[in-house]
Amino acid sequence: MACAAGHGGAGHPAAVGQPGPLAAALIGTALGFAVRQSRRMALGILAGAALLAGGFYLGQRLDLPAVSRLSNADTSGRDLVWNNVLSVIRSEPVSGVGSYRLGVRLSPPGEGCTLWPAPDGSVTPCPAWIDRLGQPWLIAHNVTLQELAEAGPLGLLGLFVLLGVAAAAAWRQRDPLGLAVLSGLLVATANDNTLIVPGPFVGELFWVTAGCVLARMPQRSPAVGWAGGVAAAGLLAALSFPLLVGTLRPAPPIQASLDALIAPRQVQDTQNYQAFVRLNLPPGAYRVSLRACQESCSTILTLPVTAPASGPTPLLKLGGNLYDTAEQRVELLLYPGKGSVRPQPLAQTSWTVTRARKEATP
Image (cartoon, rainbow, N blue to C red; front, side, top):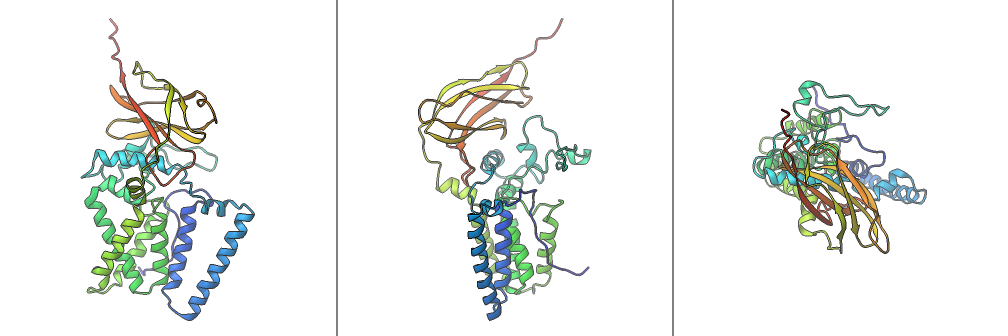
């Protein structure tokens, strides 16, 4: 079968105007043009950049959703997902949890596997052979976190060596279409997962393109040596921003305290657990998240809350199903009102919930 590299898309269903796919399309197209290295192409890039700049300015003035999302730093709740994935990584720091097994840890307690929603909003349960994997559609929304959680450090290193060699080979071959596809989808995988296979989106297209580029590479190509190593290191640094930002720029301290917390420590049933909380916070918009933790943590519920200029927030009711286990940790986390690139919360507290033994009926 002949190889062709002319594909693009997103690795997970995305809202219209989501910044990841838009940025991927722009960067992939720019790099595809750049490798042509001709005066005509250079003029085309400049003309295209001018048109994009004008369109971006006009889109902001007209408040078009796609342009607004592209200029918005809101990560659409991915910071909560990244924090949960970090808890998975801490639980299995060497081996990872296994390929396609991350969704089991990220799924809320008691939630079964479902396929993608239909246009009418209805969902279909997964077939039995998929259900055995748990929730394979729940992803880390970042390639570094996904691979580190599933395959550990060694798997992460192997993946980025392969990606670096493929990217270097495409550049050295001056393959505009291959480079546009690879670079665009790699940009998109910074806040999504465009490499996962099998899938109904673009994972297969990415690897077919990478395979075609590698098949044309000479055996003694520099892409296998220093060029591939530099590309691998650069990709790893660029796509690991949730880890780097959380490490280099911790969440700023805020004056946050609990005005009230009503949360049962012992329950007869782990279903429909409820907690009530009221917070003293600096004025502004926040998100309050409740999550359950065993080996790792998964989110139960997240609510927006606005702290008034004076006095505590309104009393918040948080609840959902806990894990069906004798003991677990429940955490209350505070995040900024808009999703950020920092996975760590602004503040958090936790408590232990135990399930009381049911007395045997005589």
